[in-house]
Length: 337
Image (cartoon, rainbow, N blue to C red; front, side, top):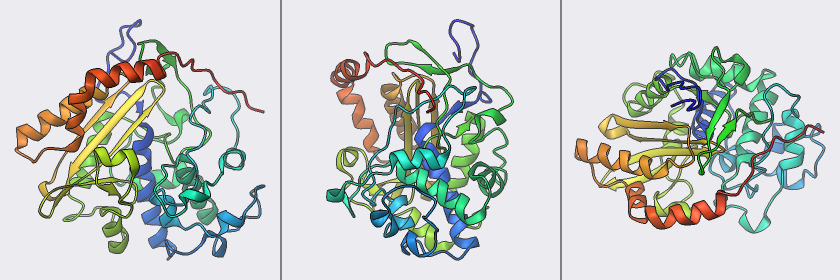
């Protein structure tokens, strides 16, 4: 159900925030930008972007590269995951949000350190290069060409705006919220549109409708960061906006999940098999179901075991742990200063 109390059913065209799956779409937008403007993903930002309008200490930021942002190896910290705002109230600008969020952990430089801030910085880079809004650029270059006509990084562009974001781990309704930044987790999409996305990704090596740069695409779909900490439990590494898992011989899968207040999402694609699955839910209790669906998908098509299936075996223990950690969290909107 999209809304249990109002008895509103979820359909394949119901919009829902896909959270960090947004990063995969942002990565593809960066691929288009790199090709269109002949950018070098290994060139320090300070050499081609004017950083003077960011009111922060810039010494570390100047040397960061697009590739480091794409692979979470810049040393940037996670960012404020609780900075959520009422969609109908004023929110900070992207610039102001980045000025608050940009912070480096020097011990993690050149190491995988998952960072929402890094992908929000990619959003800012796009806007600095093209002098156009991020959401409009992604619409023009990625979403519209893939016929994802009910997907947007702008909540207010949705035709049917949901009132609820979803349900907490204790099954409490969570009011709709937005982020000040878009690149890391603000994509709203539908099951129908996300099916189009995984159809594209499953055939990307044979018929690339977006005509991505071959070098970028190769790096996007291969392990660039191998030691990814706890994520190594279910993946073998991270590419450009995608987790990578080696299945057998030369076969592999690409995937990304998303989770936030009231939402859990996941997709898994096997490009060599031209097959994939996407799961969108409006509940923070969904990860065991996601693991079971992936297991069923894999067994139906006779693929090798996907590491995410292993979550099934720690389901009971982890539910208790997650319930203790998250169950008492109170979600409140942040006020704009």
